[in-house]
Image: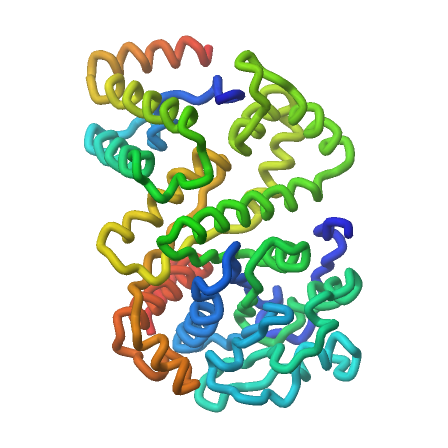
Amino acid sequence: MSVVQLSQITEISGATTSPRGPHIWAIASGKGGVGKSFISSSLGLALSKHGKRVVLVDLDLGGANLHTCLGLANPEHTLSDYVSGKCANINDIVVDMPEANVGIISGAGDGLDIANLKHYQKLKILRNLKRIQADYVVLDLGAGTSFNTLDFFIQAERGIIPVVPDPTSIENTYRFLKCVMTRKLRGAPRQTRKLMSKILTLRHGESRKIRTLASFMATMQQRHPDHARLLQGELENQQLHLIVNQVLEPADTDLGLSMTTACLKYFGQKIHYLGHLNHDRQVITASRQRRPFLMTFPQSRAAIYIEHMAAALLDQDNPGSQSRP
Amino acid sequence: MTGESTTNFYDILEIAPDASAMDIINAYRQAKLAYKTDSLAVYSLFDDVELDHIRSQIELAYQTLASPEKRLAYDTFLAGKQR
């Protein structure tokens, strides 16, 4: 399957609430069970408290459960209706929450086919995300590094990656980041890719191949500065953020900043640390009640932290205007 | 590690060339924390040899930039390289 070129994802000016189309954020991770759907739904609800129209899209293909996090049992329409052509307009499959200015494109009850999207089906979704009538579209992606997941993630202007303080989650987070960046670089023009291959087969004084993206980019910069600039542009066209979730011990709160430090060394790219969320039994309680956490426990520490994160990101999207609910 | 000949002590500590003494201390502490022996943050990203190399670079960068005399000499050296 080929890499989705940016030129393939043409911006179609549909009837959105903003002339440039909605902001698109994607939540993804290398490992499952780190809180992607919880964070997607909570961030979406937090954004709506700022008066933003939000549409959450469940792109955890084959493992969709975002509707449950929002307390919607059986959404009337699902992504399958759009992919199959049963609904022609992507906005027709948005199901609104009764209590908030939040809609969801659900994957509830989707069949086997949806987990294995064909390339043209993926392009159909990618091309039309910008047509969704909303200020913010939040993509809740599945765990892992499938091409579908990576391509949806790369499409977003902000990529948010939850990680939990556990070696397996950290290892898979780094693997996910490596795949994201590799996927982005594979979208480079052929001539640049040829030069990249040459650099990657170079051996240096210590007879070691280039191991980190940072050293690869430094070598590209030394030998082919024009191509390096192009690649750097591809890597920087998306803001990446890290959230440390399910924090149990005070020492775990250091993990986020330490990971961003290590990422800068390894990838040569700035990953922004958004903050941490403590392990909170109320999250499980809300899930068992099939109620949105942010609405059920709005005074909890996790809810307050999520609202701070949403406000911080809104401030970045709208510099100069202080976003406080 | 290869391909990092352009990295200077300021890059190693992730600070600007005009960083204050306090900025240098804070950056050093953050780097020490990230690369300490039992750090989860570097799990699977670097091997032991690379981590030793990174830690020694951090120490060298700090010892140089924390001393006003050594820093001045280093800045003069960097300026000469850029000319």
